[in-house]
Length: 481
Image 1 (cartoon, rainbow, N blue to C red):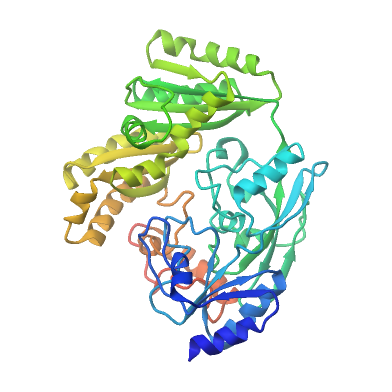
Image 2 (cartoon, one colour; image 1 turned 180 degrees about the vertical axis):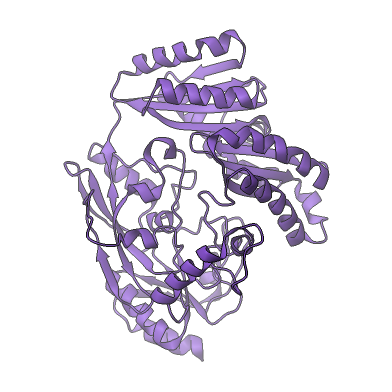
C-alpha cells in the first residue's frame, strides 16, 4: 500500500502532478539510450519551488528515496532511478518559466526545468547570447546542465556551466529553500554555496532556479570545416587559431575520420565535405568584427597549412545553410553512432599538450584488447575534452558473454592512460551511477572523505539520488589516487 498512500499524500499537495500507471511512468524509468533501467513507485511533477519543498519534506520524513530528473539525457545513468524500488522520480519539467531577462545586466533568471534551447532563444530575443550549446539542447533541461556542470561546444571561449551560473535556488533534502538567486559578478561574503551544488548531480539538493550569465550577441559568425593530414597538424592548427584570434574562437571541435565516416553513413543531411582525411576540425569564430574580416584572418592563418598540405581541404561557410551543414556533422554524432553499433564511450579530459600522447598510447592497447573494434574520437580540442569511443557492431557486442566486464576492461585501459598523463575520467558527462567505481579507483581518499562530509551535511538520511556520484566506500586509499 506504500504507493497508494504516498500517491494520495502527494496528490493532496498543491501544485503537484503524479503519475502512477506503469505505462505512463515507463519513459521516466529508462535513459534515452536504453542502457540504464530502474523502478519507482511514482513519478512526481512539482509546479513550484514550494511544491518541491513539500515533496522533499514528506519523503525525508518517511525515508523515501528521491531520484531527480530533468530532460533525461544523461549518458552515465544519473537521471533514472535504480532497481531497488520504494522510490520516486522527481521531474522538473513543469517548472519551465523564463522568469526574467535583463539585457542591461546581461543576466537572466530561469526555472530549472527550462529546455536549454528555450533559454538560448529567450536570450536571443533580447539581443543577447547564452552560449551553452550541445547536441541535446532541444531536450535537456538547464537544471540538469547545472547539476552535471555541462560543457558543450563553447567551453573554449565561455567556460563550462559553472562559469555561466551567477546564482542558484535550491531545495535541500529536508525541504529547506536556499534562495541564492543573485546576478552579482562579485560577492565575497563567505562560502559561495552555489558552487557546492553545481556538478553535484542532485545528491546535495534539487536545483529549482538559476540566474545565468548572458553575453553580447556576436555581430558575426564564421564557421569552417578542415580536413587535416594528421593529429599533430590538427592540434597545431588549433593553437594557431587560438593565438591568432585570441578570445574570438568560440568553438574548436576535433573529429576523427572514423567518426565522420559514421555520420556520412547515417546522417540525414548531405555532408558539407566529401574529402577523406584521418582528422577534421570544426572551427567557429565570432565577435564584433565583420564576417569578411574573420574570413580573411582565417584564410591568412590557414595559408601555410594549406601550402604544406597539412590541411588537405577546407570549407568556410558562406551562408546559414552551410553553417548548419557543418554543425550538423558535429551535433549528429551521437544519433549516428547509435545506428552504427555499440559505442563504449569515455568522456576524458587531458592537458592540451598531452592529447596526441594519449591517442598514440591507447590505440594499440585497444587493438590488442578488442581486435576489430574501431576507435572513434570526438573532441572539444580547445579545452582538452575528448570523447574516446570504442565502436563495435551491435551483433559483436551481443555475442560478448560478459558485457559489463568488457565495458570495465576497456574503460580501465582508457582511463588509466588518461590519468597517467595528468587527465581525468570524466570531463563533462558527470559520474551518475556508471562511474562510481571509477571514483573509488581514481580519486584520493581525502577527496572522497570531503565529498562524503558534504553529503552527510546536506542529506543526512541519504534520500537524494542515492548510488550516484559517491561510491560504496570503506575509507581505503584509491589504488590509482
